[in-house]
Image (cartoon, rainbow, N blue to C red; front, side):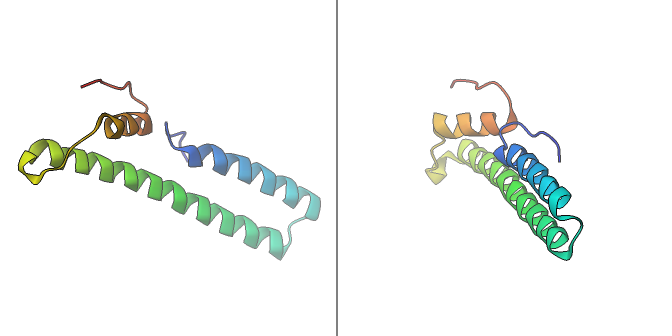
Length: 94
């Protein structure tokens, strides 16, 4: 997984993977350690993808609000900051 700016699941995933590798080192390569590692990897990947999908949804929502002012959608500075943080770019004040 890439080190995606603003995605906290990347760091958590690396930390948990290191812990599982230590456990595998202590316990050995057993069915339990293999299954646990696979489940944890799948869970972390799903959470990371959900985070990235949320970022894409925020961007789409922002585009809708900017392009369709009649919709009554208001894009706040908080939403802009959240998007910029997730993308790892400087916040551009409106």
